[in-house]
Length: 232
Image (cartoon, rainbow, N blue to C red):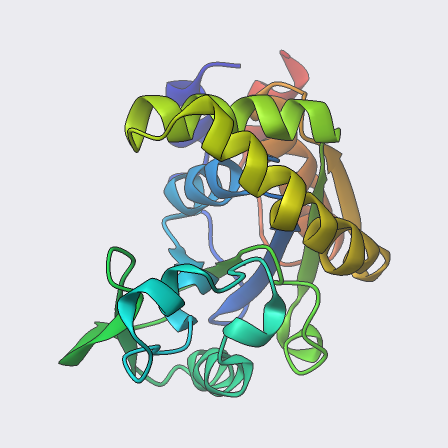
């Protein structure tokens, strides 16, 4: 099914209550961000990454900030994150922090106003890890992707988009990324309602999540969408 067909099919989709909150987790390089962004586009929802909630490290020298393990869940301010997601479930606007990843600090006196709309897609490494977030979701999704695929995707991204050397990417992956994934991220898959294969085509992963939403009565379909699905 083409992206345009899927998008057209979901025009006019109506949720029975605003908002529906969906948690999407997976290892670094699993494809969770791409899935969340596409679902936000299809459902005209809000993509809500956890990365904005990294703790402000301005009290540390820059060199020490850079040495922190950003794949450890303790570096996310989970209490503020949960409070903000809870506010969105009540249809309240929030002021989301802005994070400067080049200096590892929250931008002082600057926030971004976020309103829930119909769907909020909470996405990140630890979206299914924090216990205080789990009751806020109507659906929990885990993107399961083999480590070797995750690494190759991360290597491509960091060398092509961030100017890093292959050796530095490999060293970080082996020293912090993969160990933290094994300790924190992959075990959180037990909290998922739906597990999708991160190596599958994006359209198919999107359809699996949409099918789960339909099954829970979180979306109401129109005839056009049903016809498109049957034609796959």
